[in-house]
Image (tube, rainbow, N blue to C red):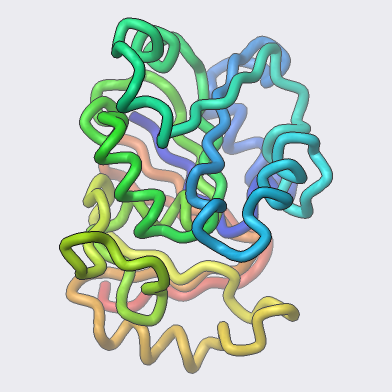
Length: 220
């Protein structure tokens, strides 16, 4: 699977061009499935989900002009026969995974069976904030909100680095470089701090930072 792990969606031309390159065809010829499950564990999540679907958010993903779009609600999948949803996921060109609470999103990725399916997919996985963080080995105590039944901060380990998103965001005054450095000091492997103009592309384990903003790699 190919990954495009963003802080805030397809925010600039470099990230947009990288997405098209990963798809191997125009967005207008590509099918998309949207996942907003992580939003429901944060305040105002239902409204944020609607903004995402309707293209009224400040994190462009759904409004890019996809050939077709659908919603994959992870909390519903355990009650549905796999024959109803697995082929649809296998056939789609891109998964657009919104943010919210990364551990809640991780829990439902596992419970739904999507986590097991992801490594075999041909789709491009596009993450946004928590949707990107969940691919890492863990998120760090700094980002723990919703606590899974077994506790801890482990996530899916589909990439070998962790992510601190929204670096120096004007509405998140605590997401400073100094905070990112303290967070990174407690992580066990490589860790990136990225701002909203930055994304990380991963193909066959090769990592490339795509940015019109600023970022920093810790523990390389």
